[in-house]
Image 1: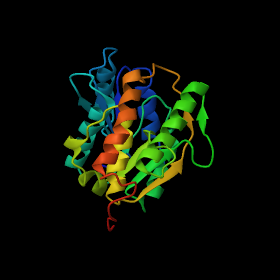
Image 2: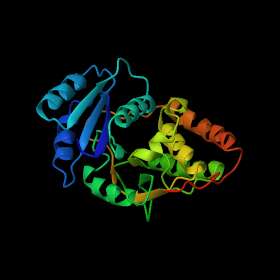
Image 3: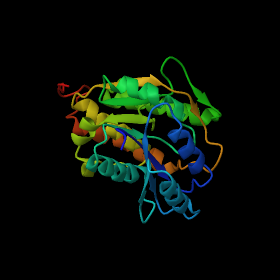
Image 4: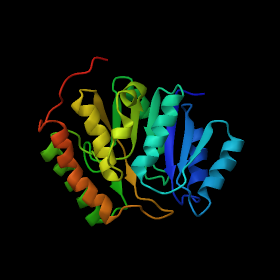
Length: 245
């Protein structure tokens, strides 16, 4: 078993999963992979099982229904913590997140509890997105900063590396959100407790195969979630305390 785990949630990703698995296993750093499949009707789960039978670094967690990205990641985090992984990644299966960035995350994680891949550090690094989607993403980041005080350029980003100790400190069953607000909530819970969080620049490329999972419900959930987080932090726009490393 390697000390780095890449959690890849899937729903109808049969075109992308084999290529993603091959890419992850060919990286310059050794990683294990956990595919969390939400009972994909296109047979992604079966493909994941076939890959796991072929490669010992690949594991599969089957869920019986599609009930959100956040719940898929929570299941993956619990699985990872039951093992002995030190670095635990969130990463999309559609190649919008470049696997080649993983060594950069690991280097940053040597001095941080959470590393966020940012599309907006030092400029905009987004390819093939319509202007409307880009503006929605940037405005969401500014909105989160205004309400919560979190000083991160890309709080809705889903390419992340958690240290084991950070996830162990969270009550995972208490995480409420599910869509993009899940990314905001996970970061906020660690930030408000004083964990060290850093950002690394990434280039985000919109998916080529498959369809986006973004919906109006996800956007509305994120809009209201930041206010709930502000209340949870006793209306403070700063961390409560510093956690010693």
